[in-house]
Amino acid sequence: MNIEQARFNMIEQQIRPWEVLDPSVLDLLFVVKREDFTPPAYRSLAFADMEIPLGQGQVMLAPKVEARLLQELGVKKSDKVLEIGTGSGYMAALLAARAEHVVSVEISPELAATARQNLERAGVTNVAVETGDGAEGWAHRGPYDVILISGAMPALPESILKQLRVGGRLAAVVGEAPVMEAQLVTCTAPGVYNTVNLFETVVPALAVRPKSAFSF
Image 1: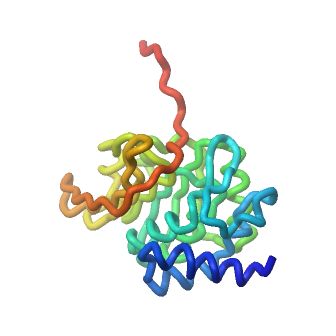
Image 2: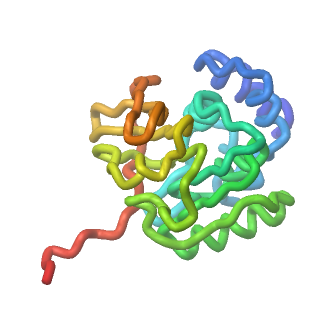
């Protein structure tokens, strides 16, 4: 397989038609090597228009979904970013290339360890991968200019919205299959949020710790 041709085809045939036209995002997709963050068993599918299994019930999102969310977030060099759901570390690497610093939270210790190795091998130094349940955000490292949730949630918890700075943007897929919307939420003033529906999609739910049936 000609890797560079496959990468070019992914960008031209999948990503551009999905209204991803920001040159800086398209250029970044050439620079950050998606195949280096893909599990070895699926490396030949690194550029396919599909989700790639990571184990633990988690996936790499389809390339066009990742690229569109990255574009809509409009990450700037001064931004402090929170990613919930590290997976393989690929999205964290994309975010890190545009941001000052990324905190990425992964519930699976095994995936967190793999992501750290992938990021280190790619020479990415401004991402901190932390192991934990990010279902309520990661408040002690906040507030953030950008939050990306890399898995679907039935609704956005208020606790996560409160971790956005004024002017901050949050991208998430909200709803339950078969009806989900990718949304961009902007904090326009303290406690005031503007939500724009970007596109319909269906992605796996964010991995969270099961809630205990008993509370004492």
